[in-house]
Amino acid sequence: MSSYYSQLKNDTRFSYSERLFYQMDLPRNNSFEENYLQLREKEGRLYSDSVVRLLPEFSGSAPLSIEWKIRKQSAKRLVRHFKLKRPKTIIEVGCGNGWLIHHLQQHVSAEYLGIDINERELKQATRISNGNLSCFLYGNILSGAMSELRADMIIVASVAHYFPDLKLFIQQLLTLLSPGGEVHIIDTAFYNSNEAIKEAKNRSEKYFLEMKVNSKGLNYYHHSFDVLESFQFKIAYQPQRLINRLKRKLISDSPFPWIIINK
Image 1 (cartoon, one colour):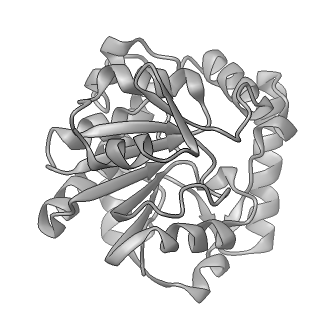
Image 2: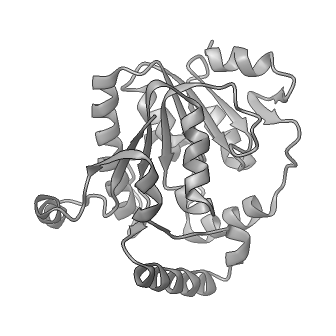
C-alpha cells in the first residue's frame, strides 16, 4: 500500500470513503467543479473508464485526437526524465480523471498521489489506477492542509491556468518538495507580453461564450513568463526553437513549454 495512503489515513484532517480521501474542512460540490464539468461535457471530454485507461492513446475524432497526440508527446518527455531521475514519490496537482498517473504507473515505478477538487473525475481515477501504488485526494493544495506531504516530483499538467496567483501556487508546491525535487509544468500556455495576454483573454472569453458556460465560474487565468523570474527554473522543451517548430510540422507536438522548477 502507498505510503501516501498511510499518511493520509492517520491524519485527522482527512476522511476516507470509497477509495478516495477528502479534506475535512473543504466543502464539496463547489461551483468550479460544476462549471468545469459542464464545459468538459460540451467538449466531449467526459470519457468512459475504458477510454481513460488507454490515454494518451485516443481513437476519437479531431480536435480531441490532435490534442491527445500532443499530450502523448508531453507524457513521453516526462517518462524519459523520470526514468533517469528515478523518483520514489510523485504528486500530480489537478490530476482530474487520473489518466496521466495511470500512464506513468506503467513506465515509472513510484508512489503516486493525485490531488484535485473535481470529485466526479477523482472517483474515476480511483477506478482506473493501481491502488497499491497510488491514492487520490479531494483537497485544496493552497489551504495548507497538505503541508506535511512530500514528493520528489510534482506535476502540474494543463491546470496552472486555474490558479490566479501562479507565484503563490509555485511557492506552495516548493514547500512540498523533497531535497533536490522538481516541479514540472506542462501543457500550459505562457505569454511574453501584456498584449499577448490580452489577446488570449479575448479568445478565451469568446470561446466560453460560444460554449455557453460561465467563464467567471471557471476561474481561468493567463500567465506570463515573468512570474517565473523569482524561481530557479529551466525550459526543458521550448516549442519556439527552430528544430521544434520544424518537428511540429511533421508530428503533433506541444505548442506549450515544459518548465522544470527546482527547490
